[in-house]
Amino acid sequence: MELSELRIIDLKESILADNDADADRLREETKDQNVYYVNVMSSPGAGKTTTLLGLTGKLRDDYKIGILEADIDGDVDTKTMLDAGLRAVQLHTGGMCHLDADMSRQSLREIGAEDLDLVILENVGNLVCPAEFDTGADLDLVILSVPEGDDKPLKYPLMFEKADVVLLNKIDAMEAFDFDVDRFREYVAMRNPDAPVFLISAATGEGLDAVAEWLRGKVDPKIR
Amino acid sequence: MELSELRIIDLKESILADNDADADRLREETKDQNVYYVNVMSSPGAGKTTTLLGLTGKLRDDYKIGILEADIDGDVDTKTMLDAGLRAVQLHTGGMCHLDADMSRQSLREIGAEDLDLVILENVGNLVCPAEFDTGADLDLVILSVPEGDDKPLKYPLMFEKADVVLLNKIDAMEAFDFDVDRFREYVAMRNPDAPVFLISAATGEGLDAVAEWLRGKVDPKIR
Image 1 (cartoon, each protein chain N blue to C red):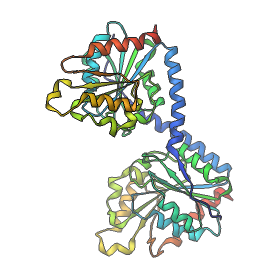
Image 2 (image 1 turned 90 degrees about the vertical axis):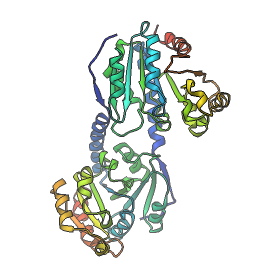
Image 3 (image 1 turned 45 degrees about the vertical axis):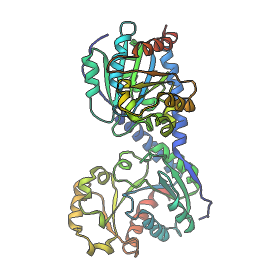
Image 4 (image 1 turned 120 degrees about the horizontal axis):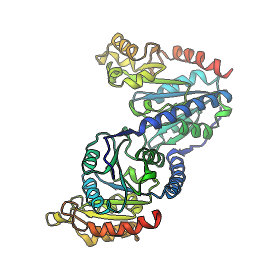
């Protein structure tokens, strides 16, 4: 028996490092399949599903689209997508609040990504843990809604650091809330100076054309 | 675009299947190293640390013992183990409430399991998720304490199904609680008819000799 110093092993760091490498492999695999993979993250109720319905409505004539609906349980959003005539698969994480790269790979296989141009993952509704795991997506799209408040980039730094693009949803409700758009843009820029911020209302459709155009500019170079 | 039926993919099941296979490999690896690996699970506050201090006190003259202390954060238990002169390493799971086989493998490497006879993992204090992931241990030891109530095998079925042995701790406090030991034994047997139940008080040391003897009977055949 020997005495030893206090040693602390951070298990999650090694898991995350493994996952990062696997996520890079997945991006190569989807490149070979000519499929663009988008990871959509937000709090519950920020409007992921409505936003995706609006966006896919503008993009579905040009791209073969598949939707991955990740939830701890339930299948409401997948039914909504199927009712809209979209190819959609429900993913159950069984209590886990994130998807990692290998879960993504399995999901892309299940939805038949090789026949698609664009796969959009609606991640588990949560501003913390989904940001910790690289899903292997080409683009991380974060949605915040006006009622959540303009200070969220300060409170959830990792989510906004990871965001390649930020959609501010429910701008039609702006008057009812004390939300300062300029301050929000500043806070986003503190975390991630390169992420464009689009103001939208998924309910009215306002601002979605601009997002769809921007997305085309990301998708086309990879899949064409 | 095509319509499809509602399909649900259970991501966790495939993760668990991968982990099960990896856990079997780890048991082979520890067999080659002549080390016996015990996974200790309980609620927070059931007395894992005090029980392990008592048990290792009875076993440390005969075995080279290492303790893995898994916590979401903190290092109190590891300091306790080091103060007792035990080889111990703190594991941080970074928010995750379980250890899987690969996290075990990494931890065994960090503590230098190849030089030890017996490694005991004090898992994250939780009666749900640690039971879902096979750590690759040779033995799953579950501790329940009297104040938690005799109905816990009904409420946490998986934990008691997985238990190879159950220790009922804090029996010195039995009079203060409405705990029916016979009923508890029945409930444990419903989940797992093969698991012996030991009554102990880690605080007074009562019952620990019997547990230590039983453990020797498990450890010796693997490492000698």
